[in-house]
Length: 291
Image 1: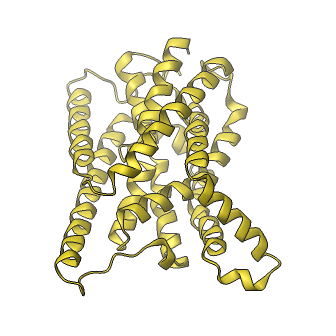
Image 2 (image 1 turned 180 degrees about the vertical axis):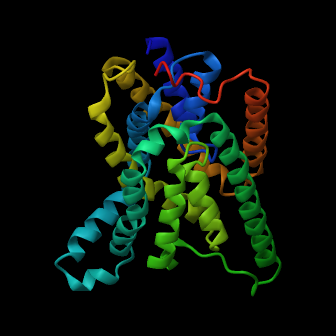
């Protein structure tokens, strides 16, 4: 991997990680369109450490409160009813599905799941799911605005083990490029009746253990194939800086705006990808043989 490739891929990772459009798919597609080697699952996981560092800084107060309350609850029974302490357990519970499936499906994640036809399918299907979830949430918010007894949207204070596990299984879908970690978990949250802000906040908090564990695990594969330490570190640093700016913008955006622009983008990109593969402009395995 050249330094120029690492700069571009770092920018792509930072721009797309927190948006519901799938960063792993965009890294794969950027390389395919440019005629580069597929950066691979290891490069993707490691650069996500950079964007996750942005989450740690952006939500540092929330994370500090959760960790403090959770550790105190281990020896102080009176703290176990504290919301922040419960959130610590719920993040752990929600991380179980992706941890188990990530290990079980490792070979598929690094191979068949990177087929461009599968990515096109997941872009479209999850785009439709996000669109439906967004429409239902908007309708519920509208009804609630007109009638004080309208549909109640839940906040994280109402999050329990059952919903935490559902969030976790939604996050696990992102093991397939094209699904989008934030897109799947936010869609799941909206369909369960959570507010947009609550769904996004828990989505980002839930990603911390999974992303850091995956990235650290994949460190052993750097210098294998065409990916080396220097370009990977540069891409990770760029992803951190760009990712912090994007997460700050996205949290403001979702407070009052619809997800429909992302829905239209996902569907259009998925259709375009099917056309390019179907007309042999792109191979469904572009870059894989050299990667």
